[in-house]
Length: 223
Image 1 (cartoon, rainbow, N blue to C red):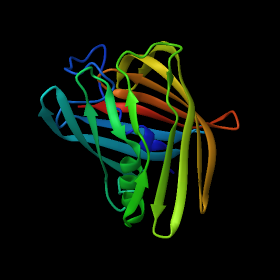
Image 2 (image 1 turned 90 degrees about the horizontal axis):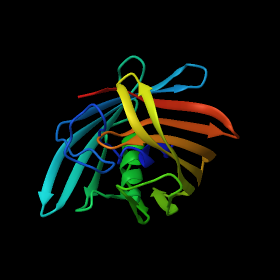
Image 3 (image 1 turned 30 degrees about the horizontal axis):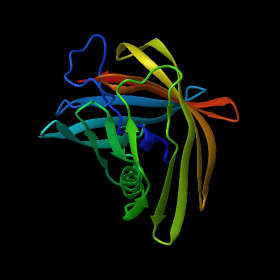
Image 4 (image 1 turned 180 degrees about the vertical axis):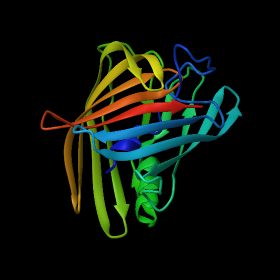
């Protein structure tokens, strides 16, 4: 339910595409990235289109606003509206994002109801190397009278890897994490592997349940 929101705030390019940013977030205004998520048996899950709607420069910092739309196989919207998010690219090209705000925005898009969420700022350093670890994240979400908790931990960089997807070939780092999501009608315990590259962010995201691949989301196109 919440797993895509841990991803949508991290978008930039590498390799074949010339970009300004050196961190893991897209600073190209009007850039569009199109992903397709499928189940392990090949069934379609959704199409995810993220657009960088605005980039604002304030001194050495860049505030980046994005809008994410999720579509069904017939092209119709999966949710009631887009998920709107913001991130900061600092003077060292580290990505800073408020995961609570991101999840609240997604829940409003999904349900049409206002949601509130609290949690720490998440930082994705620009100089990640294999063996590095990231701080755990705990987000508390309130939707009406319902309360949810999202925990991401055991977050570490496994390796560097060149990966080929429909959008091209990208030099990536591979990040592993464990995620637990708890709340009324929604309980998940998953392990994620995500391939990130500078200038595009994530190009592939795999989710495993009890060690078995459940879904893969792959970058199909970028403009």
